[in-house]
Length: 389
Image 1 (cartoon, rainbow, N blue to C red):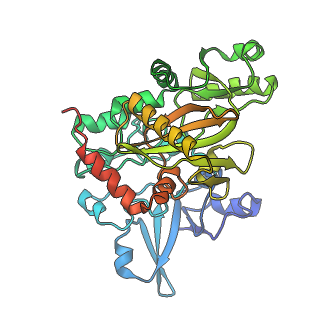
Image 2: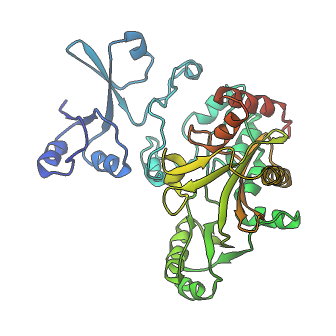
Image 3: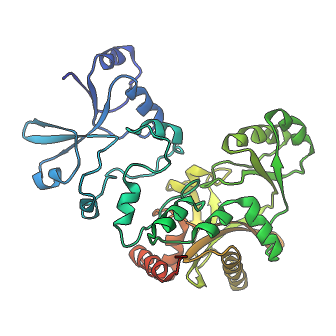
């Protein structure tokens, strides 16, 4: 076998490098690849493997691998990007890292179509091979998913049909909270203050006239997005036209919302209580995908530096929102505190982020709850939820 070994991806596109890649049977990469475009480029030439090294034989045998090479007494395991699931699924519960040894959030948002194309089975299913089989063997599934399929109630509905317990809200409340138009209607009906909004349905050729008539300043959102993907804050009508065109990539229905300027607060609900609000000030102009998941991309103050009365009002508003939308166990409500001291609910998240850079762990820490204790409390509360049988 002819192996092309790369220690990093610097200079990857140089002709003298790509000529070698074209003749390789496999590519072994020894560094981190943090751009999907590089992964796609490498896969054009040959199957791509990640190289890991360790002298510990026990550790080595615990990791699924495709090829093994010993060089200078060090055993290298070439772990393919599309790992095989072991025949005995029970072993996954004891593995130190399951099938995700490199789980991390990249700087760029994931390209879901590329992920699908990278699957071995090339099937149309949104759920990977054996995922539900593994879930059925669990006492409880801890959901750490976001956005489409993860937060919109579909995976919750699948688990409900299988009778598998899981963390967080049920399928219906998850779907309601995820759909910004539906949740806005409920907020309005319950008297919960939220910016004025309008549901749009239009074609690409209608973006120009629409951009000339919508009230400004405004926010343009896809109705079912997450992690700040599909959210635009146009400063003028030229940017508004561009936003109206680009947002159609996420779906045919679009939300135009009045933009309210003020301090950005987010408040978590855990069980039947609210946690201290966090104030977020992005390092850049917007609190986008990068600011949400990369350390140092935003300044977050927890508890927020607001008067006790404002903190109380924000907490009670988050709890009202949580209950109005039928959420369970935990949630996170994003809101704006305007210059007049009024609070405006932007949206509620039925499965808040749980990375070290996420809001809920920080709010829990502010009341003396460690990350492990927070996870245990979410599990305990979820076990008490009576799902529809």
